[in-house]
Image (cartoon, rainbow, N blue to C red; front, side):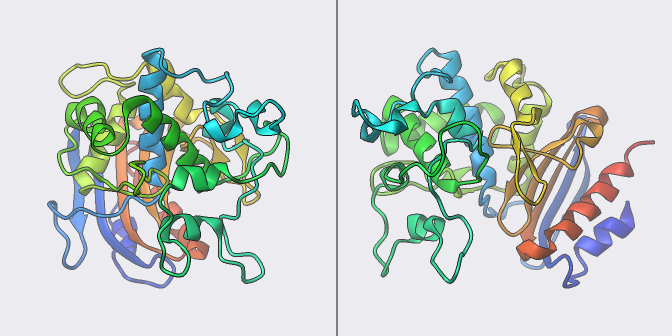
Length: 313
């Protein structure tokens, strides 16, 4: 166990900077370590781990009968009779198989769509991130092609917004339905000017609160005080493969499979090496937060794999 922890906090170029590492087993903290200037009360960026929290909100609304996975996604911009995007379902969006054109990484020096969506162009923020993403044309028919896109998450969050209400009603709904029941008192989502949670990227939490969210999925949708807030069948979808990225990463439904699904593990993933790894067979939740270049993240995953393996005996 210790060599993997020491490596993560070594500052070595292959792992970058680790701000927080937390391991819980059977709800008890087994490992808790923080970097310079960080402690248990420090809220840190989720980046794309927020996408997995968005998965939870959709699961609640599906259970409430407010949303349907395999019906056309309720996006007003696609409602035209001849608009081919009408074929896109909520399931297509959640599995990153919408077919919409989107640039997530720089190509030929072009600014990625995700950067424009989150930070604007010429210092002018995009007022409605869901509308910005929904405006993309189809590059493929919906269904066959897996293409990771923060834009699809923005569209899903816009759909949730239209059900629960924009801005403060959305914030309050998250607090009452997700954060408070799970005990995530530090959770701070960020909203755009249209009142849409920017759930592709922004929910700030302490490491312990990120672990509490992972525990919700480890426990099949039941909170620490025994309240069921998600159907077990819904949390199961976080571990079921729906497609693979060119680099071999296995996508599920706004979550990822960890490696080749050793220990039944799956994880929420954030830019620069943020992880919430849920490990059912070992009853573990592992949280790692920090800053690691994308091209070096395999070293972080290897260290986390070694750490998880140390709990096998």
